[in-house]
Length: 385
Image (tube, rainbow, N blue to C red; front, top):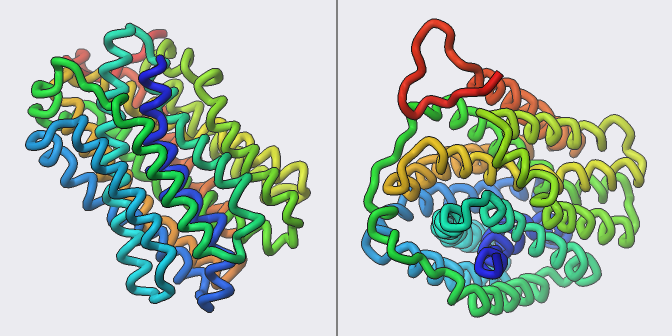
């Protein structure tokens, strides 16, 4: 479990710092650089596009360089990209740097997920997978506590994020120990046919979940939330992510079929809708806690389903394929939600999350139903009555 905990610094860096911390800096960058909400959303779209390209390349890189090296050098590139964001205010250059951070983050996310899956297989437990994905909460909580007081000085904040990512790379370096399964896990093919319903739900989730955390600070700014509320909301959100394994490790490992995934998506949709229903500080805080306690459980549940329904030789390729779908969704999501919010309000971004995650929950529930018109096929997702 110690190895999984240090490996979790990968998601803390690639997701918590490189992707989600941008939401904390969006209001200051938007005001200082005179962006529209669509332009601000496009920054996360660029990050998502880089993530898409990185996901497409990761399986090839892992085959040639190994899963451990892919993880380690991806961590280094994430740190460099975050530091580079501090040195320019040119919009196109910032888009390129955000894309680079996304590409490196995808390599870290996929390679770390494969390593965590191997740790879980050796331990005969799903806990290492949920611990790995919960690492994103460390990055969110750290950013939530440290960034808001200095958010107006966004260049300094980005430099600090780069330094934090560099420290994470050093601490996690030896945790990326792959063991004797390295060659086999990097050489297989993607297995998508038995998981098509899960793939579609994952695509909708990706397009929906990212808008909540991208525009949360902008939403709080529109609500004229004081600094203390912003710090408390983001820190609570991150700590809820860290606590998620306690809530979801058991259901993810034991509940049959897609039941855990369906529950996660449904709760996530409800959590996003909660802040819209009653925009009071206590309710927004509750919304952030519910959101944090569930959203990183979705990739963990999907990874568990991939692990259960594909042979070990296909884990890297299948997880890469799912990450490509995930990246496509989160590439389009922030930009489209930003366009909608420009014409309405930041409420629309939270509504976007609630609607898309609700639709994903229904698709996941349907994908988990056993077929009555055909005999079960090898690799098919089955549920127990």
